[in-house]
Amino acid sequence: MASSRGEFSSRFGFIMAAAGSAVGLGNIWGFPTQAASNGGAAFLLVYLFLAFSLAYPALMAELIIGRHAHANAVNALRQISPGPVSKRIGATTGIAGFIVASLILSFYAIVAGWMMAHCLASLAHLAGMEDLASWLTEFSFSRNIVFMLIFMGLTIGIISEGVQAGIERWSSRLMPMLLITLVVLTGYVFTLDGASDGLRVYLLPDFERALSPKLIISALGAAFFSLSLGVGTMLIYGSYVSDKENLPTLGGMVTLVDISIAVLAGFLVLPAMYVALHNGVEIFNEAGALISEDTLIFTVLPALFDTMGVAGVVVSLTFFFLMSIAALTSSISMLEVPVAYTIEEHGVTRKKAVLIIGTLIAGVSTVILLNFGQLFGLVIAVTTRYSQPLLGFMLCVYAGWIWHRDSLLQELRKGNAGAEHSLFWKIWPGYVRVVCPLIILAIFAQSLLG
Ligand code: PFF
Image: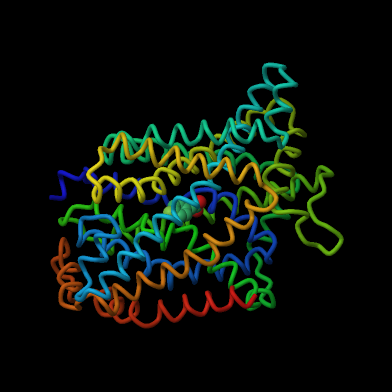
């Protein structure tokens, strides 16, 4: 059954695809920006703690349910439910997940389009086409829609190729490219004046801020968004993993890659901010807060690149290329959620499903662009701040309470001969049942109140 619906061909392929989903704008834009506005190292420490203690166990819930069912989230949650009511709630959760994944893609494609436009703007600068460069970097409906459509077109193209030829092949090519670009760029920024001030902020924690509720909530949201949790992305990727693989190890590697890239991006962005400050670019307001979060990527960094002459154009090109790649390996995982559901539940061919759903999502992005002031922030808040934690909560409840314990343990034994002796076996089943839902509920309650 599994192979007829697509399967990752290798462990490396799965890790690249799942890490590709996890590593995205959230890591390279979201994490460093939040670290910069929330006390640098303090945020880093809280983020690291939460990523390992909450996000990894929740990720495992999704991967294990997916691999057990070898099906999309709707069908998978139905399969592990014992009675009609839990089946119905499970199916509704799965459908809600695919709607949220689609909505995330609708705003993500807009931001990713800006990244691509900035990348091309560097080329336009190099070619001396200044009018084009300003169209590419200035906020306008025409630019926004053109690049959203190009980005959606690329996402649709990759997803219509399927699991191995599309997702796995492209993630395995793009992820190493992303890592190399990030390391080279970080190394370069380290050589510039002012970088060490940024490093200091990033590495010396301000403990008073580490314990503030605002910081903890932001770090939780960041960890959740960063690992693509709640919406069924990891569940569907888990469903393409062979029964021979040891899932806790694979999930651990994906978490490690995701966290490492976020931490590495902090080593790039925070020093870059202070280099910009050193060069007279304004970053902070009088209260010492970041002027604006988008300012960091779309104003501060380009201003920094401008101070570097031709080298700056190359660095800018590389940086925005990196962001575009990171966004693409994430967007394909978002589109796969509704696509897999439509193929499996409605018997539509992959190409047709991708085209119909991709077009619908591009339509939603267009509506957001037409009502940017009202909708952009709202869609981000509703999907990432509220829906992701709530759906993550449901998935942990399904793994911990609804799914028959013996069946769950049997799934854990697959591909893992000595499973019973592992720490994971001893801790995780109880942890995902009690601790994860409680923490998620606490974040959810906090974000509703706050
Ligand atoms: N993890 C991605 C990032 O950090 O940018 C965002 C994301 C991908 C969220 C896939 C949700 C999702 F289903």
